[in-house]
Image 1 (tube, rainbow, N blue to C red):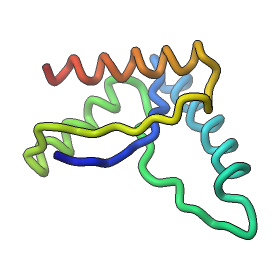
Image 2: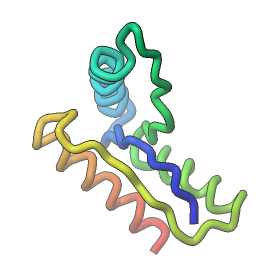
Image 3: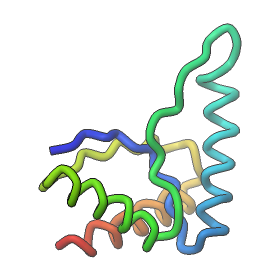
Length: 97
């Protein structure tokens, strides 16, 4: 099992994923990485669904992983965006089922 605890910024398109990531990055930097603290952001699974499938597939192949633990902060995005991100992640999971 890999516990990568990524934050999810998965979009239906690359442009949408970029928008999600920039929003998350801005909020993270203002809330968690603000002086005097410098907190590393950690892993972010970003990109369109097919790109995240590739990311997960590479980890699965490299390490023979059978399970992943995902950490997603609910409330960074609007409820609609959060639901879309989670639905996109469900598509990633389905690709490996």
